[in-house]
Length: 248
Image 1 (tube, helix red, strand yellow):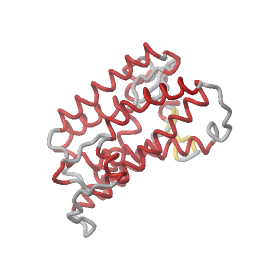
Image 2 (image 1 turned 45 degrees about the horizontal axis):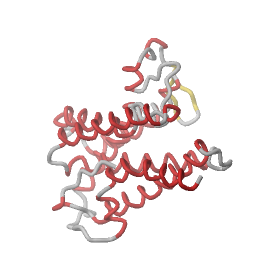
Image 3 (image 1 turned 30 degrees about the vertical axis):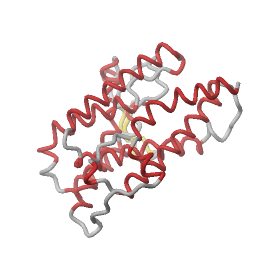
Image 4 (image 1 turned 180 degrees about the vertical axis):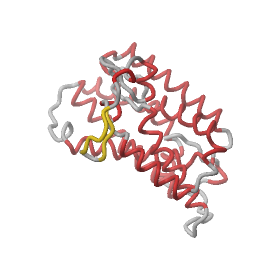
């Protein structure tokens, strides 16, 4: 979702993939409003099918953001800007819709992860991209259930984590969710930073491969949406809310 690709290095396939994902996200959130705010029945949406849909959206955005990190000439500025919007969304949801409050949502995650990656960038650049990508994928899989108190490999529970890690909002921010915490959009640093780093290392593999080409920007509907994904993310929910208010 973070629009970090400069005009000179825009990749049409990247913008179009991001644009397709932003469309999927808007429809997913529209369904969320219908089901949880307006009481419409959609059993498939609260089943595994809805979960897979949601995961496909967030995983796509996070992978793209990690891939695009290298194209950003001012990552600190972007990280701070996205963090600011994450705070704004938390405040707005707390006031406008407390039952759907967003704390440590996707924008907060993006902003913090960009800043953390910038801090560690010199060290990360020393890691072999293939090895880094493999390790990142493995860590993402193993820590996917860390918020629930354990490490796992698929459905196999391999290690219970100590309860003292799950104490407060700070630990929750990093992925160790304390009891009673609620957010309608929760993306902690762990495990999602490892998916971001998967995209980060994949870019380096792509950059050194024959897959890389000039592939400069072109104007298509999807690529236009992709270029403005952050703006669309910020305004799409108020627009959906207005539309549903008018309808219902």
